[in-house]
Image (cartoon, rainbow, N blue to C red; front, side, top):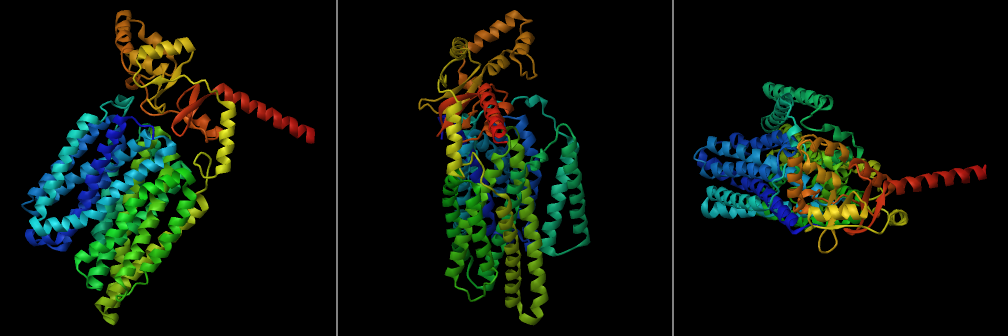
Length: 635
């Protein structure tokens, strides 16, 4: 995929850390009955181990975008995993419910940072044509947590109790922290000192998301109470002010303006609908299998396991299919299957074969993989790399809110239907009716998602959605670009780069590895930025030189030190380039947003040419004049 060995190690550490946090969430549910018995608490109180975790998670995610702008990947990862490890150790000790709940909340603070951070690093590290595969691998690893977490948890609980379960997770977390120290980048983002945290936004975000999710979570478990509804209303009002403020201030905590991007907005909406339908199933299915059909908890876990395994195995495959065919076909097939299978759950009875239920769930999880990661990748690809961290935070936050609110509302509806029908139908049949109604509401959500996909998710250029269009763009770029490309090996020094720039009269060059694959980019601006003692960023290299030459001795000392450094340490550690299948609009976007005069053209990760701004201008003007001439001759 064109990544260096160090980048691969970095991704392994990040994804493993993410997997551990996912595994932690899936192993708690089977332990709840044992915790209730040991700690002498009821179901209303014990559910806060999951509700509280969700609340803190939702509060932390919006601030993660600011943290990623301010701190290095290594520092942020170590702090978040450190919080997670400390919380897990508290849970393992857990002499009473208060300590256990405190541990869960500290865990959630760390986990809320890790998930969006890992997605951001993946989106920035991988080139746009490989992101589907990258996020597929990410989904594969994380999907195996719900596949095996409950089963492993049950075995541990039966053999040694739930305390050991947390100590094992803590040990894994500390081990991955040590690995993170060795392989993660300690370089802060550019202009990190200029990043400002708006304190009022932080307060509005915390009260807003916390109040809204708390209110609806309590409503979902104990019904509609005036105080809980008031807390939810206050949270909703605070969120309105939070979003308005983010659009008006110069330094927003969360760039909610990414929702103005139509593709990203559509992808987020579809993801929210899927998340709500998915999380509700996780609650309703155990009730159906254990309470209504009378099967033990082990059978419930075995019914869900094949679907989780299929979902995990399909994620990288769906990523490859997205890279090849684009989002539309996958989205249509996935949403159609999700709608059909969810409706199938709405007509189950207490006598339905457990094999049939298992197969239905497997197909539903298969469908989810065709929608979830491809559509999310499609939406994220539409954002500029500079705001991807904000995009992942917005996407994760809204999906979590949709999942929590959807679960609360649909479970409340199911409970209301059950209570209303119990006097006439009996407890079992009334509960079955409540489950069916809940799944029917989920079916409506899936239908809405299908309609949105049909209307808004279109195949576009640059996503390999239509081969003929790809070939047209490839032929066009091949005819415009120059094939005499000058590159720098990743082991080359800055002095080598300076010699290349002066001899070839160029201002930038891609950085390649031993296989000739692009792994970075170096420009004269990157070099001059290292020579400047100013904190500001300058677009014009001449201005930067003038600002540095006042202190000649200091300037030349810096220059001498810089010449021996590797270009991979000075330049941009990601590929700035365009795919040979991209259209001219995408090429213009990359040139303008990165302030470049030229950009390398890539095919399968390897450089096949370079295209200049002047080449595009000349081609465009020639084509325009040609069309004007043809139109004049026809008239």
